[in-house]
Image 1 (cartoon, rainbow, N blue to C red):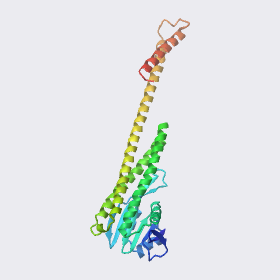
Image 2: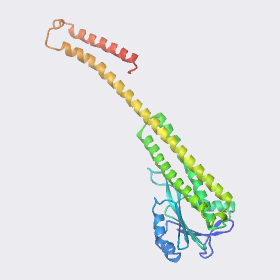
Image 3: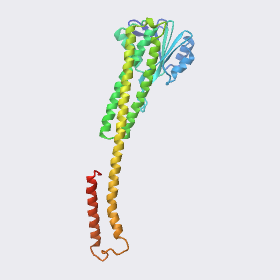
Image 4: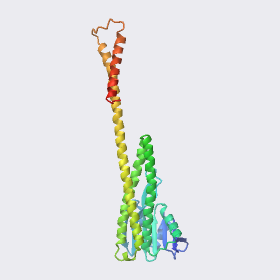
Length: 308
């Protein structure tokens, strides 16, 4: 899908392909791909790079085009990875600014509504790049709040009973946080490269640059905090599981020893040798009583040693 936006105290959709500020392309069709590659002459190699979900953030200049890739978060339909990140390609040259994504996200529609609500004016291509980078950092923080809620829910479930499902849920969240940390570090490096461009750094809005830096740092620190908390929680529950296993093995060992006592007594008196009870009519009950008394003594001894 391709959408054209004009800049009029905010970004508004327009049907005019000639008078637009931003061309937003999401999951392009074959015709839209031809439009990008043939009419706009976007470098095909860069187009293919954006299609790769693992592409790292960077900035390049080729044939007059500024080619930028940043990472944006999105909700995934994969139950094993509920949150993921994807590359967003930003390409601009002269009066043409194009954004390209191969994944549906909430960021771009929300960004458009935000510019309309705040009546935000886009002064330059780099101004739009920085505002999109700021919006991506804010959405990282929004998704981190949802991840934190999932961590609390999994923690509550683990306090009731430790099951594989809850531990797997924590593992899935940990994978999401790893992707977030990697993407945020890449976006941070990209931001510093853009900020230090010799021919453009004097044109940047210092307030906007500061906002982007603050939000990026906050998103990175929050992700690291949640990752550390989750790692500590999983280590703690691993220790709990190991301790529970030790307790169970100790109890089973104690029970096995208690059960061995009557077996040993019965084995001794079951041997084919004289034992002074072979002629006694109550020999069986005497042996049974002896076994029971010794077993009871063993139970009390193990209880005293906290083996049960």
